[in-house]
Length: 278
Image (cartoon, rainbow, N blue to C red; front, side, top):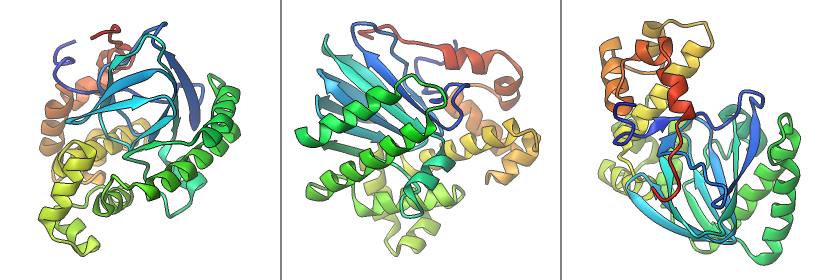
């Protein structure tokens, strides 16, 4: 597929049979890695065994057994390398469901990279084992999602790695994806350069690019709802014009909006896998 090696793909986290929540398992011995991708669902990766290296935006992060990674909606990520015994659980919720489960104080997940204590890890792994690969296990997933977030935030409070401006910027943009840098800076009562610098450091992509991805994901959601055509969805998502939306599709996904929705390109993106070791 043209451009798939150079651009992250949009790959929906949730399977069609589970529209609100799901837990996947990944074992390096089985393979089937996804390429670098992003999606609208916030995601948690809980490493149970082994070690791995992830590409997260421009950052490269190493994780080991007992560690937790969180990716907010729109953050591209990829498993770059792994030990032969790697085993992890990937947990994801629909954004609206996540906000309902976590409450208004936590509209966005991540970025997060923390270690859980052994006593904390064991019950979480047991809960993930109960929910894994089960369509319709929304309540189990919601309880797991809430517990892991609480543990992750408690661990992060002991050794904070993500700047408070990044966390607040993610929360603000989750509510209003059209907010630009100046608007965010005013809302956060911070200098624009500080907001931009910490965001790029923590998320691995520029704030401008991240905002564009949120808008693209919003366009896709609106068109999929059947209540908006492309031009109306582009406007509702915060693009100044349809031509700006078109340029953003080309820049981020390497295709025109109409091709994304009206050809097999979207399903090919969803089904693309990268072989282990690549």
